[in-house]
Image 1 (spheres, helix red, strand yellow):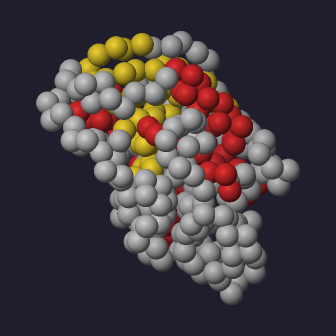
Image 2 (image 1 turned 180 degrees about the vertical axis):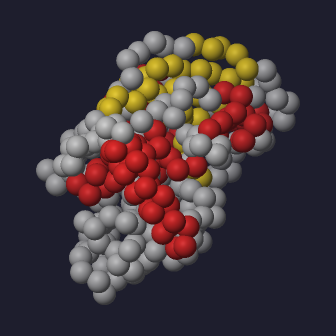
Length: 314
C-alpha cells in the first residue's frame, strides 16, 4: 500500500449512516505504498515528514521469502494445469482482458468524502493510460483495459474512516475474481491492496482501498494524479513492490526491475541503493515515488500480470 501521515481535520461525526445513493453504471468489462527494508505488514506510515498526507507505506499483507517462493511454485503448477486443459495463454502472448471496475465511494454520515463523477471517469482514464504503456516510450502495454461498471455511494462514518473494513467490503463488493473493486476512503494511507492468490480464500475483501483525495484533481500534494490506484491495482494483478526483498537477485520476481534496498521518496534521479546492476527503478509504478515521477510498467511486469491473471482471475 502507499501510506501517508494524515493532516489535521475537523472531528468527524461518529454516527454511522445507512448506505444510500446507489447508482450503478452499466458498461463493458475492460480492466500503491512503501515499506522499509522488511516486507510490509499491512500499512506503514513513513518516519519523519516524508509527506504529510502523502508518501508511501506497506500497502499489502506481509509476504515472507518462504511464502513468496511457495506462491511462485503454486502459480507455476496452476498455469501448467490450465495450459494442459487448453485454457492458458500461448507462449509470448499476454492475457489481454477488459476489467470491470466498481467504484465504492465511502462518505461519512454527513456526506463528506465524496468525489465527482468526472474524477471517477478521469481515474478510469488514468488506469487505461498507465496499463496501456502511454506515459513513456519505455513503458509496456500490459494488454489490460478498464471500464467503469458501476459507481456506488454510501454514507457511513465508520466505513469512510476505513473501520470495519473486512465487514464493509464483504457487504459492498461486486463482481467475481476478474472485477476490480475500488473503495474510496479517508485513512492514514494512500492505498491498500489484496493479492490475486488470496482471492480463493477471501473473495469478499478482494480489491483496493484508495485515499479519495488521491484521485485526479484531489488535494493530496504530489499524489493527486490518480496513480495511487495504478500502484494498488498493480498489486491486485500480482506485482510486488520493486523493493520487495531488498538487494537480492530474487527481489520482486521481475528480471527487468533492478533491485533496490528501500522505497523511493520523491523522484531522486540516479538513485542507486544496491550494488547489484542497474539504477533504482524510481519511475516504476510499483515503487513509492511521486505521481509525477511514475511512468511505466516493464515488459516482464506485464508478463507477470498476465500469468497471475491467467492463474487466479481468468
